Image (cartoon, rainbow, N blue to C red):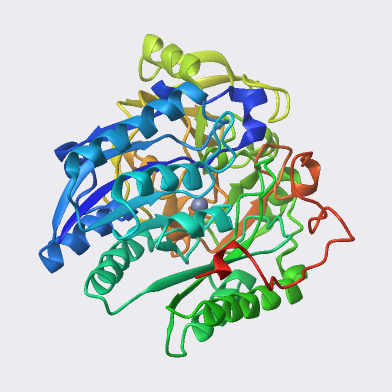
Length: 500
Ligand SMILES: [Zn+2]
C-alpha cells in the first residue's frame, strides 16, 4: 500500500495567550518529505510508530508534511493556513494513495477555527475522496468532537499518561488501515462527549484513569468492537466542545459503537469524583519531602507545566525549596535565557547575581534574586530516554547554578522535565539527591517512577493548575463538572454519526 504520512500537532492552551501570546509560524517545527523519516524513525512518537508499521508490513510511506509546536496559545490564522496548506499541497502531490496515516493532537485551536482537527480532516477528505481511509493518532488530551468522527475513519487516542504508547497506536493505525484496504473492516466511529473537565490524571499505578482504561479494555472484548478509548480532553481550552469523551470504533455496526461508547461514558460519569484532586501547596510539598524517610522524593510542579502551555519560568516551587534551605537537592528546570546568557558571560566557577524566572507574568511567581555559582554550561541538545525515547531535544544553551544546597538547571527554551537526562547532562546524579524538583504534570512519571521513593505533586497558581475551576470557561457548553454542580450526563441517542 502507498500510505501518505504527515501531521499537525498542537495542544492549544487558549489561556496562555495572556502570558505568552498567540502561536505564530516560527514556533512550529516543520518537516517535509524525507526530513520526516530522518527526524522520527525509531522514536516513541505517533509518526515513529506509523513509520515502523509501514516498514514491518512492507508498505510504502509517502512522506508529506509535518508541523508541531509545543503547547502554547491559540495558533494565528496565518500560521494555521500555512501548515494546513503545506500538508494539503503535499497530499495532492502524493496522489494516488491507498490510505492516509497522520499524527494529530486533538486539542488544536486556531484563530477562527475551534476544531483544527475536524477542519483539517475535511480538507484532507476533499483531496482523497470518500474511499481512501484516513487514520489519525491522537494525544488522549484531545477535545474530540462528532465532527472529527465524520471526516476521519480511525481516530486512535493513546491510552497511557505518560504517553508511552503513541508509537503503539501508530503501528495499530497501519494494521487497521490494511484491514480496511482489504475490505475486512468497515470502521464506524462514535464519539460520546461527557460534560467533564478532567484534571490531569495519570494512568500509572492504582489511579482512577487506570481503572477507566480497564473498563474500556473490557468494552473492547466483544466481536465487532475494534477500539474503545477514553479521551481525557484538555481543560485549559475555552472552546464550546471542550471536555472528556469516549471514542469507540466498531466494524460496520453503528449501534454497537454507540452502545459501547455510552457504556464507558456512563462508568466515567459515575466515577467522576474519583478524579477530583487536592494537591499540596509548594510549601507543604517541600515540608513533606524534607521530612520523608526514604530518598529521593520527587516534587512535580504541575501548575507550571510547559507541556500544557505554561511559560516554564514559574518560581513558586523553587522559591519554597530555597526558603526551606534544602540540602543535597536539585531542580530542573526554569526557562530563562537572560540568566543562561549571564552564566555564559561569567563562566564556570564564577558567582553571578541574577533575578531568576518569573518574567512572563505575575501568576507563576516573582523572580528570585540569587547569588549563584555557575557549575556547568551545555548546548542543551540531548536525547529523551523514557517517554518519546529517541527524540532529540534542543533547549538552547543551558546552565547549572548552585543556589546554596540546591543545584538548579536553567534553559533557554521552555519544556517539561520528562526524564533524568537533563540532570545527567549537567553532571547531577538524581539517585543521590534528597529532593528533586521539576515542572511536569504526569509525563515525568515514565522517567522517575523507578527512581523516586515518593512523588508529591505541588499545585501553585499557574496556567496548568489542576484546579480547573479557576479558569473562566465562557465559551464552553455548560454545565460542566467539576465547575458546575448542575452538570448531568445524558447518553446520546441520536447524533450526526448515526446515519449510514
Ligand atoms: Zn497529552
